[in-house]
Length: 129
Length: 502
Image 1 (cartoon, each protein chain N blue to C red):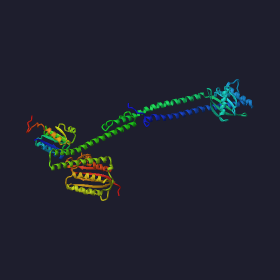
Image 2: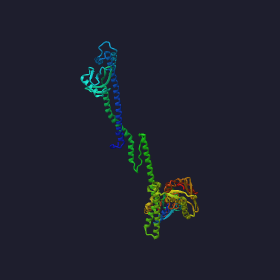
Image 3: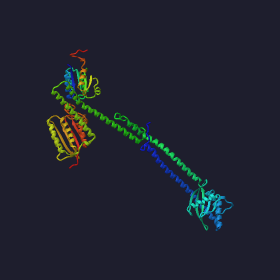
Image 4: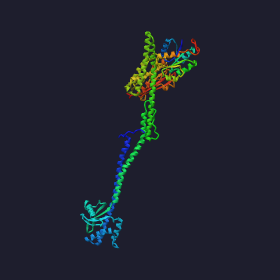
């Protein structure tokens, strides 16, 4: 079962994406700041991170660096209310970008696409080449 | 080169070239007329002086002659004849009487040889005339005398054939012989010629001058107006999308340089305004996107499959909350916009502050009770009047109070103080909460600034509360200041002017 970490300061967003994605069979973890996210990342292998940009305590860009430290091959979808081109400017190198106002259908599609191929490093239940 | 349209009567070009030329033309004509007529006057004045002198001299000589010749009429006639002829024919005697000698000198001095001399009786009948005065010309002389005031001294111009003469008519009283009229006619051909040619000069040169100045005036007008045309061109290039155009004014005159500079600065200010508006709009859109994302997401997820009634209720509840959040943002923004551009939104009336804050204090205590917080009120004893809109003032102070309650720990105290001071009243709202960092302090009145951007702590705050509070204060001719220390607390002070005291 794929593990998804949702990092966002807005509780309603976390709850919404959580219920959406767990209904699809993913294992969901939530974090609202760097500490909580770090706690999750260090404890287990995360397949996908949904990362918000505008957060009060730790800015999304900083968070991106932190995630990279834990797992440089981490797959991240930036999920923000900023327009897509601005998201790409702020965090180049993410796997995909999502404007939250696009709606959950779009989010689901992007999540599925991002998780199409298995993890490159130490996979547990899939073969890697 | 821009197409310059046909001149309008109201245009600078018209005024500069045509009007200016007309005025100049009038001035030139008046000036020329003055010069011409004063020249004319001078010339004739001189001439007349000479003529008069000549005539008197003739009279004097006749008088002298007649005295030597005798008292009777014949002698008189002879004297007249001698005078005239001597003047005309030169002396035919070798020796002259003193009178003659003097007369000869004067003839030369006065240049009488070429003048016509005629002596008339007072009634106009000719007595004697110089030989060169042919009968026809003599008739003219007589006519001239008769046309003037009889028996009086006057001058007249006469034209006969190709001769231009000026004739002096001088009644002269001769001792023992009575009054006769001495006429001397002198050629004024050169004078006439001079005046005529001067007149022609004027008549020809004035239009030429006007033409030239109109031409030059037009050139100057165009030169001066070039920057104005450039400003017009540049102004036309400016749209709400492109405000980059500026006018160059390197070679313009000073006054135009001021205009150009003011114009360029105005465009820069406009540019900044548009930038501000664009930024603001995108900030607004941004603020509204999260509630929208939630509403859309919740609806989409809920509809994916059949849910329980409680689930649907939850979704509807969440969506309602988010809709209300957006409404608050929109309303606050509308109010802010109105405040900034149209303070007619307020209804000012006398507000008594002690009553006002007692009421606010009550309500605050109710709100504070939820967090076990204490509310202290510091109100003066005497009544304080201000002019204000009660509704919006409540809004202002509750924004401050809500913040104080929100960002303070449970059990702490907030204090509301009202202090009149020198024509104004200071209202302070102090809390013992988390305070504001020094770097945030200047930003807190900005729109959408969330002090602590943790959504849970902020609750349903729109981030516009302080911005609104300041706008309301300013609309009341007041101001808000803040002092704060991290972890110690903050004090917001609103200063408002007092109404006339009772």
